[in-house]
Image (cartoon, rainbow, N blue to C red):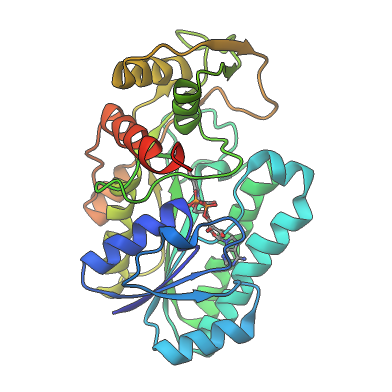
Length: 325
Ligand SMILES: NC(=O)c1ccc[n+]([C@@H]2O[C@H](COP(=O)([O-])OP(=O)(O)OC[C@H]3O[C@@H](n4cnc5c(N)ncnc54)[C@H](O)[C@@H]3O)[C@@H](O)[C@H]2O)c1
């Protein structure tokens, strides 16, 4: 198979490229490098510098490389930034995906795995969250994912293609070989920020310590990036077997509080984190935990990596790739 990975220079896309190569696929790694890193893309993949907003380049790429399927990771994904610049987010995430779908349609490409997000649920009242929970995004970012899911549902019927939309919870860790991992700038995710505080000996802001949880900090579901990519491979195979379009949550059904994550990072590094209690951030739900029964039943997928292993890999990656720069 020839698989095009959009957002291949980003955190999750770069891990996907490696795994697809390992599975024996030919990989067309596409990224506009607006946020990602060229050096994160495995050199055995064919790199195409292009934007999902550039239909002409997309059509040329699909034709040149005879692409069979697309894994679509390319998006902007900072919640706070999306509140300040919603139109940028609608343009890049929604119009970018619309343009990509149009180019796929012209090139007769019929399979897509899409990166959606738990952000589509907003502050869900029932935990763990199943796929049929109401979609009430609380940020423009989450709304762009909800809109794209609607667009995929409509376009797949009209143009006879099939997609799997994967709603990730909090992705963490690095590739098993530690060659690729999280390198966002600015970094908004908890684990790399705790590690940064440890390495740089700076205080860590914990936003909200008065939530209705056992230790007062917010609870999230951390899913290992390699486990996440396992699910992508299974989703791709699911489509290749001729199954129809589906939506799946990807999480572990287990929550960890911010303070529990801090403690686990201290355990892995042997260092102490200086915690600064800060006010809650607007729009941060108390708890977000995934029910993944549907992915288990239909994709035969189960996450296997512990939070400690995710942190250990993230820590090693940070020391190797981020702290050295
Ligand atoms: N990291 C998480 O915890 C998480 C959780 C839920 C969903 N997601 C989704 O997963 C996907 C990947 O996330 P990530 O953490 O790897 O993000 P990332 O920012 O590390 O990677 C995104 C990549 O897409 C590229 N890109 C952005 N817009 C583009 C465009 N128009 N054309 C071409 N390339 C473009 C960027 O340069 C970057 O390399 C995103 O769609 C994100 O919304 C991530």
